[in-house]
Amino acid sequence: MIRTVPTKPFDDQKPGTSGLRKKVPEFQQPNYVENFVQSIFDALDGFAGKTLVLGGDGRFYNREVIQKVLAIAAANGFGKVMVGQGGILSTPAASNVIRKYKAFGGIILSASHNPGGPKEDFGIKYNVENGGPAPEKITNAIFAKSKTISQYRIADIGGIDIDKPGTVEAGGMTIEVIDPVKDYAELMESLFDFNALRRLFESGFRMRFDSMHAVTGPYAKEIFERRLGAADGTCRNFRPLPDFGGHHPDPNLVHAKHLYDEMMSPAAPDFGAASDGDGDRNLIIGKGIFVTPSDSLALLCANATVAPAYKKGLAGIARSMPTSGAADRVAEKLGIGIYETPTGWKFFGNLLDAGMATICGEESSGTGSNHIREKDGLWAVLLWLSILAARGESVKEIVEKHWATYGRNYYSRHDYEEVEASRANALIDELRGKLASLPATTVRGLTVEKADDFSYHDPVDGSVSEHQGIRILFKGGSRLVLRLSGTGTVGATLRLYIERYEADPAKHDIETQEALADLIAAADDIAGIRKHTGRDKPSVIT
Image 1: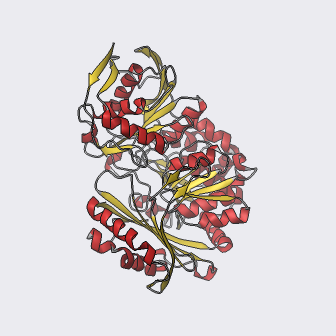
Image 2 (image 1 turned 90 degrees about the vertical axis):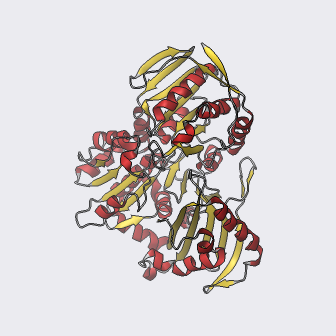
């Protein structure tokens, strides 16, 4: 039986950088989930009888929302839903399933690296048929539908057992509960030389991988320990938990400090890595060295041909605008294109589909390639392992040789979390107002060469995305970037990105914050960060 249920719009269902994210109690409001899911379907055409992929990172409220989505999908005419067993499906795995089985699209339930639990974060994101996040024209259409919705359709199909693999019919729709790991593991085995990686572990190579009690646990166990033969215990915190074990599943030096401390200790294994809530981010740490996400992107691109999938070389590299320019120097040496986009993986989709870029990356620990249309934490780890196996050097040796060849981009991100939205917006508005007067001025001994509000012109479809972050570029290659993040759920997160390029190898061993000290001070002088935020220091430094 299909019911049509009257409803009223909510005024806050505008998708952000990666879907709609709110606190769990907001999603638990009567009709809140139903309204948004119906708005997704109302913004789409041509899905009758088609397949929808469904899954999430296992956070609190994941299972309940899966049941709602199944019932609404049946009522709206989908022919089939492929759902991950137990409701589990990492974001990269979901992208792969969409592409492999030629699904119409997918709904991913995740708030990525944000905390989970009854009072914490939840999210709903729609991905299109290429496996990537919905572009702005679709998310804008979803938001428009959410503002005028008056009813939703739902089928009375009862509770579906999502823990038992197999197929059931319900509400005139087929529901297939799939192994969430199998297709993804097979994809990784097609990209990388697993025999070479097995030999690496057989040689005594030691690794630590922390899944942070998030979605990558089952994937890491299967790939690293079972298929590649890494020692039992290589994978830590591998059981997905609704509250991520009470921790923040963000693989950075604050929330994964235990991993950092282990990798800096005398008994450190050869390689350390971690991933986030939904499996699309990565943290890379060698014995005695942390690799910044920006440097990691550049290193992966410079060495990608060691993996069979990239043996013929890269078509191009794409990076988000706040990401350091380290990858630009690799692209220049390789003679390939480099593309600077706004933050948000959705902006890479067109470049990948058009064959203009092969590897993409963001400073927020996201890296991926054209094998799917999402960033992919485990993929990055496997490419790093492939490089280590091929070169026979330590992470530290590989990084230092890269700096000697290309120069070092000293780089850091300062996050001011949960700033009162009005104060954060006032900072950005005031800074925008002074952009025209900044060029040729000198601050802390640094001369401003250019200052603008980044605007992106998509080279594939010609679309324009404005107000994507404020850039202040100094003579000599240093720069500051300020933007408000779209991935939080409370207040606003102000992100300050600081970058200095140093070509001289004799100056490559300076502590990062020390190397950036004058730029950090200049940022406060120019933007009034302390004045506007009321903070003496950032919440997180990475």
